[in-house]
Length: 422
Ligand SMILES: *[C@@H]1O[C@H](CO)[C@@H](O)[C@H](O)[C@H]1NC(C)=O
Ligand SMILES: *[C@@H]1O[C@H](CO)[C@@H](O)[C@H](O)[C@H]1NC(C)=O
Ligand SMILES: *[C@@H]1O[C@H](CO)[C@@H](O)[C@H](O)[C@H]1NC(C)=O
Image 1 (cartoon, rainbow, N blue to C red):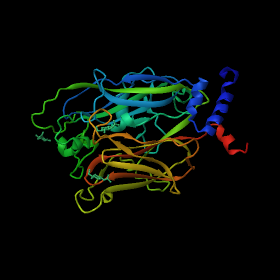
Image 2 (cartoon, helix red, strand yellow; image 1 turned 90 degrees about the vertical axis):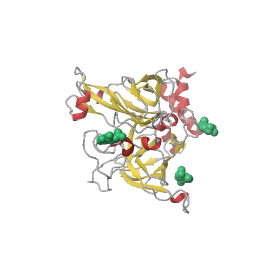
Image 3 (tube, helix red, strand yellow; image 1 turned 60 degrees about the horizontal axis):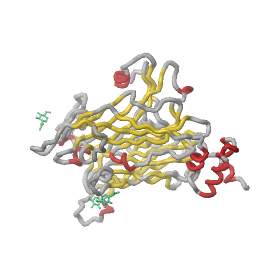
Image 4 (cartoon, helix red, strand yellow; image 1 turned 90 degrees about the horizontal axis):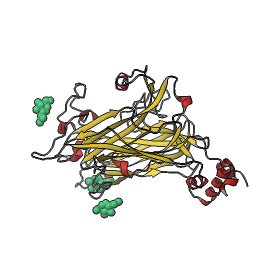
């Protein structure tokens, strides 16, 4: 019976139906069988870690679906050579991110060099829609320890459009790079300290390029760069292991019925001060100072470090998805509209056991927002408030407060029907 209808009109009919019934649109699209989700599983290049060691590497030209497509989801986790998932208390996944770029055709192996020198002759970033400066936080997807329990799928009929030949500069091709940062904490003297990149535990006082860090820099990415070593208990024996980041991508071939979404990433450390002319300067990391003793007389409510930042959306739209990124100690993050309405709240899920995906004390997932079609709208030029909370009963170094949203310019057509008298 499906065949009696033209593709589009059936979709509209079904969308209208599902809106009244409040069933996700994906059902209708699947029944219609016009948009077929494809998926593939890939592995990063192999990397080796031993107790206390750190990997922070960029892999260029990684395997990724090609062509003009809409990416629907991206999942990743660390696995061993046998493909077994590795728990966070052995290999802490600080973060993985994937970035899109254009590479000049016919020139090979110049990516790393061009990337370091920001030489655009053969290499250009194709970043997300913002809002941090230059290439900072320009990724399409990226998560950390929460990677296993954080949904990333983009609901139908939306998608992240990539590989559009009309957007790729002449003489270039689109490629993807991946940055993986993992810390082997087997046998660590202070596991949390290693994951928070505390400089004393790494015995680091200069950055990767030999520049002194200064006594005020207690911890963060500058102290746990590639091949640094975190302090391990004396006599601890652990083998060197070969590991991979295994990632799976879901996508659909591009069609005009897919509504493209824009990707925005807000950073709580952004120094933008609300003036139009002021520049964004996202610092990525910050520290949380201890603000009360856990055993003191103050209630636990007193032990919260709250940061708020204003961020302006040049163009608004409808929020399709939202998620925050926090590190251990995080107690949740919220994005508010200018009038105080909640755009999305995203809270950490802490593991409680030992097994993979439920590692005690680690953030194993972040809750996400999938607003009903059209229910959460951001106005053009609206100033949002981004809030990030951490438990401050102890200090934390190198924590993060990101908020990632997907925004569509357009709603699926049924909106027209919903708002006009029938
Ligand atoms: C720490 O680093 C200093 C030089 O930067 C070195 O002399 C010292 O031996 C290191 N300590 C440990 C325990 O590795
Ligand atoms: C995590 O582990 C705890 C303790 O073993 C258990 O009670 C809980 O059900 C587990 N959670 C999940 C989601 O498996
Ligand atoms: C903060 O952490 C301390 C120690 O782990 C805990 O006792 C307290 O309940 C936490 N407070 C909040 C608000 O999560």
